[in-house]
Amino acid sequence: MRNATEYDLCVIGGGAAGLVAAAGAASLGAKVLLVEKRALGGDCLHVGCVPSKTLIHSAKVAQIIRDAERFGIAASTPVIDLSKVMQRVRRVIAQIEPNDSPERFAGLGVDVVFGVGQFTGPNLFTVNGRQVCAKNFVIATGTGPAIPPLPGVENIPYLTNETLFAVKEPIPHLLVLGGGPIGCEMAQSLARLGSRVTLFDLAPRLLPREDDDMSAVLYQQFKQEGVDVHLGIKVLKFEYANGEVRVLLEHPQQGQYRLSGSHLLIAAGRKPNLENLGLRLTGVELDNGRLILDARLRTSNKNIYACGDVAGPYLFTHMAEHQAGVVLKNALFHWPSKARTRNIPWCTYTDPELARVGLSETEAVAQGITHRVYRFPFADIDRAVTADETVGMSKIITTPRGKLLGACIVGPQAGELIAEYVLALAKGMSAADLSNTIHIYPTLAQINRRVADQSLKEALTPQRKRWLKWLFGLRG
Ligand SMILES: Cc1cc2nc3c(=O)[nH]c(=O)nc-3n(C[C@H](O)[C@H](O)[C@H](O)COP(=O)(O)OP(=O)(O)OC[C@H]3O[C@@H](n4cnc5c(N)ncnc54)[C@H](O)[C@@H]3O)c2cc1C
Ligand SMILES: NC(=O)c1ccc[n+]([C@@H]2O[C@H](COP(=O)([O-])OP(=O)(O)OC[C@H]3O[C@@H](n4cnc5c(N)ncnc54)[C@H](O)[C@@H]3O)[C@@H](O)[C@H]2O)c1
Image 1: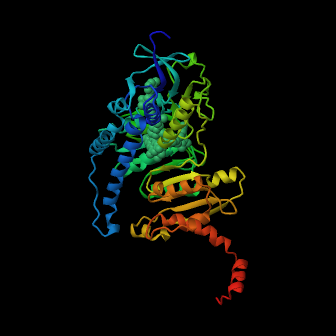
Image 2: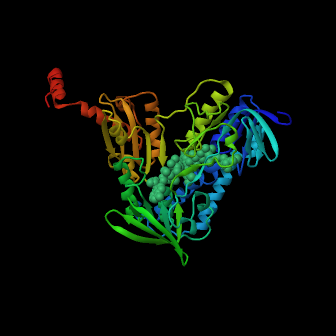
Image 3: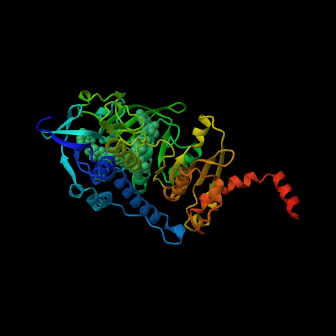
């Protein structure tokens, strides 16, 4: 194409997925163009992981001040100015931002362009009036908050993750629609930062992707901290009057009732950012608004790939980075590489944290997989006792012969602790392997061994014990 700049790779979207794809390709010698609509860093840096985890930490500090008595220190009511907390959020973003700066990427050899572009042909993209031709394209445009089409929602003011961290005024009473990771993390944080919080979800439990017993630990903690949770409800109507958001709910047993609050946060899932990309000129096919991708993350146009949240199905920064690597192998080197769909780890950063990898108990039952389940409580881990963080447990799912199928931890630092199980699952290990590994005393990580020990203890049946006694002449 005449007048079109030629690239090996054109990456659309400069979030975690796009940045990894662009930097990786440039470092391998490719000529790369990165097109970004707003700011490099995407959701994770600006309105996702970084601000939410920063807010969570401030909230934890407030809670420790409130609860100090149990550590032998006089407790007090923390004086919280939400605008100052949000200032800290912005400071932390600014501190991390240089890693994702256009200058850094230019230094890596990536051409960075800010603007919203469109495909103008199967291998042509136009941005800021400039035509770009590339051997391969990567769609890495992420997702935005999905707003369910509930009656009245179009007439009320609401917050999403895109606006919450810019709030400057106090939030006296926050209503939260959605008990998924965003809803749970933000509900608990805002409650700890002094807001009254009411959360409602149509699902029967918080974090509906998790097992009932793990989710129940979180539910108890929310109740104890004063978060008002309404599960299994249907939203009938939203209204806004006198500066108040009102919502009419229906519960199968409790019938219809109203809740009201000063602010509403909608955290009801995500929708892929695919509008106005000109996809119809590319042969890229969609199913129900989502990209149809093969295992190599290729769309129905073999030169257009996708990675990150827009590709799904696991909407995490670490998955965006993994998928970007898969796309690079396929697009640049034609080295067949498939995106992983099994043993994906994640963590929801509530307090206690809830982390998971591999098969859950619910999935094992639903898939008819013969399995064993072992649990161990934090209350029996000395380090947890010393920190007075004994809420929660670890749970593993194994085959009847002890091979690990999945692990879930709800408790202090679950997101750090699960890493051992991530590796163990990746390497096809058994509970016995964990049990035979020396863990430092006193650490929270000892729970990883202690839960695995349960599987070995079970193997010691009364009959086997009798046999051992006979064999070695034991007298007990
Ligand atoms: C509140 C919240 C908390 C989260 N916490 C965690 C967490 O703790 N851990 C975790 O792993 N994940 C977390 N996530 C998820 C994580 O943020 C995403 O998985 C990650 O950002 C996905 O990266 P991405 O590059 O695919 O998409 P994005 O980060 O969304 O980046 C997409 C980029 O594309 C740009 N773009 C969109 N359309 C166009 C266009 N037409 N042209 C050019 N550019 C475009 C956008 O401006 C954006 O910069 C959280 C998400 C939210 C919302
Ligand atoms: N710690 C983390 O890794 C982290 C944190 C936040 C977000 N994320 C990522 O972002 C994604 C999006 O998070 P999310 O919490 O917005 O979405 P989600 O899809 O995980 O949860 C949305 C919740 O809203 C409820 N819901 C949806 N429509 C509803 C309606 N009409 N009425 C009542 N309830 C309704 C659902 O039942 C569900 O529980 C997550 O899936 C996750 O991948 C990750």
